[in-house]
Image 1 (tube, one colour):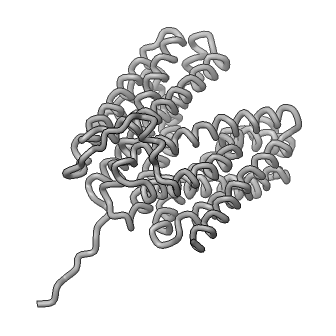
Image 2 (image 1 turned 30 degrees about the horizontal axis):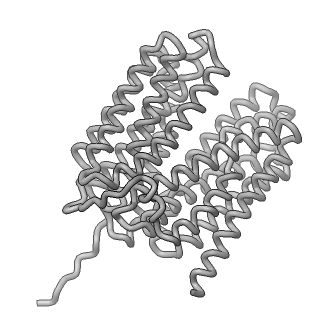
Image 3 (image 1 turned 180 degrees about the horizontal axis):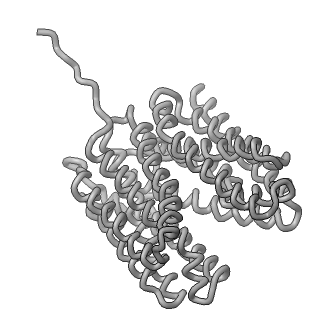
Length: 400
């Protein structure tokens, strides 16, 4: 009888479980994000408290990812850490919902982001080890798609329920339900890597011994990230650009609709990017994604002041982010050996976190001091430098 060779499968219970956990978790925390400014306003504070809360939470999350990356490599079983991280996020949502003072909101948000930072490397390592290497792109593309779908659905569902008469407090309490569903998805669907043997290393040694090709990759990710500003600035850009043509109120609502288009394109681009990554040179594809990002920023610098061109720019912005996130994760999983993948994802998180801080501060201050064209020109040049550097590194690697 002829021997039948089964094709390796990538879509399994672990991939589905992690994808569902990302979807449910994002539904929860994006609902909280949408309601947070209004909640703080009812507590008598707004902008200053919101900035403090988000800044502290993001900083703690980055540190937690660095530690969580090392920690998950020391564990024989990563699944409990991952499930516990989602569980603590559900508890933190309850803290925020019950808050009577903004400091309680800060405590809840900080707790949620610390838990998020600790469980993210464990989740990515579980996903990377659940599929053959040739399917890493598709697995990470699917997870990013599910995560972004939550970001698309949560604001729409929140707006609908508010219009149906639900209060913000009720929706905050309700946001714990999808957070708990994320825990159940991990517990019942995700499978541990069989016979995993952790290699105990001190924290600094765990990062110092990451592969040399990975250390050569991270600086270009950092250079690109230093220009990759927060896309909430797009809403401000569109509002200002369209105000003269549409009026302030219509410009603001159109900007929100354009941002929804951005998120839809983001969600739609992740899986195709992962599919291509499994068939193409990942570094070259990531460099191409970075080039799209540079083009996006330079178009903003050139000045776009009508709805149709802005729709193209917003769509381009969503597409490059989908490519960037999917490829950075799958390339990390490909380069870094399995025993060190947690540390690899922790290092990536720190580089991206530093880039987020630098880019948002740089772009915001340049906008304030010299105008949006100068701000986006600087961002575009940094992003283009990251793309060129990565492309040159890829060419040099092929000639070795």
